Length: 229
Length: 284
Ligand SMILES: Nc1ncnc2c1ncn2[C@@H]1O[C@H](COP(=O)(O)OP(=O)(O)OP(=O)(O)O)[C@@H](O)[C@H]1O
Ligand SMILES: [Mg+2]
Image (cartoon, rainbow over all chains, first blue to last red; front, side, top):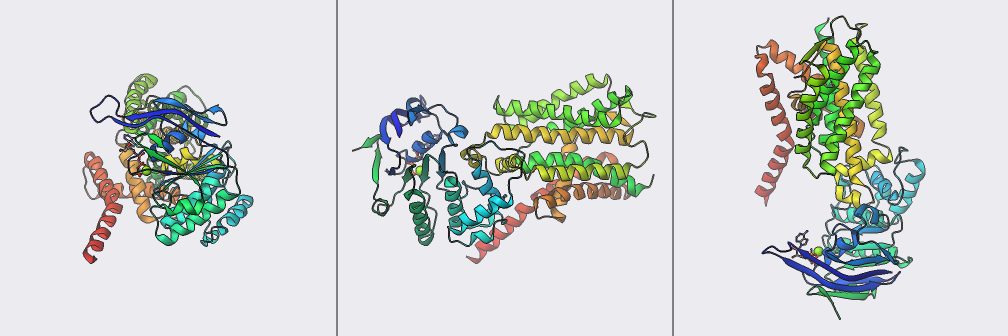
């Protein structure tokens, strides 16, 4: 269970452009739950994800995962159990590395990186299988540079990278927003497949109301730094 | 000695510096000025060791190892004290000036009559062998899990953090390897030219960058090709220098010449992008 307790976050505290984003935010999400976060532009949805992932540290309050206090755990340590897909398709992959090299880095999310080769025949076969499940024809382009792929393709690979080692929490920040309708549909279907057979917590930000029905999920609405009920 | 071979040798020895600079500037995306100090540091340490009768191979490797310590200091300044990359490197580089004078006890040391790694007069062959070994080692290393993580850190640090990597450690490692190469290059260059000098490093980053961009202009492709292009670029740079000097360029104008060449070549990809954007806009 993910539990957010009295979370407070203010940007530019004490300055004239002080911006209070969260003021004693409270909610919890059970394992296996799929939650959609709604809220207008600037409501603090991305900020909430940054706080959960550890890219930002709260001013006050606590974040618990399965009763473990992770509030001050550095981002890279939390990443061992948190998978993330960003709104910007460029943010989730390394453009100068190949598809297989990107995937091999994602495989090591919760392991120690060593001096053994990143790519070997065994994981190559595994990547090919995983990529073919995306139905984008990427399984034949393992050694193509990531930077050559389209936004939708990159986002699909990012989603695969975020879940290739099963995380406890999957954070999806408007991960289809930058894509055309067809790619959006594809990525949403993939998302549905990936989260359906898992006990992981998925938190998805979206502005698209039809997604709520599609995922028949619980909704958390952010307004004025609190959860609107 | 044959001028052709000696120019090649010089290019090869400087290519080790260029490879070091390539690791920070291009792979890690970290503008590391430590390189200039490390080059001189390598030359100074190696000269002092040789004068004290220590084995040349041992001296060369030891110089490299001490160079990696310089990289470690820059990494500390950047990752722990949060000093901007370029400033962190400059601080280490400037400190190394004083340290190098202390190491040598004077501003230069002659290696005349000392036994060096090049004593058998096979400098080109020896230089080529060392370059080949380093090239293969680097290519292997950057295909390992740690090596890939370093490349990805330079490419997209945010992603690497989200994938559970401590990117500070990756940067530190890359800086240490880079400065190992720079110092080793300095040790070899000093032995090749028969003296070490406090000014060896001055302007050397621009030389390395010029070599890198010349290489990129002639060869591109897979990772190993990029490494090879750096070596080729460095050798080609030496020939260009020989050429312009023989055409009557004043040696003291060399640094100006090198900077201009580097500036033009560095701007090329931007020029291409710019032209493409312009023609796209014209079409719309
Ligand atoms: N690192 C930061 N420093 C200062 N201000 C920030 C920072 N991150 C976000 N903000 C501000 O906090 C507010 C909330 O931003 P956030 O990105 O969380 O909104 P959002 O709900 O994701 O909006 P959108 O729907 O537009 O993505 C905005 O006003 C933004 O300018
Ligand atoms: Mg947002």
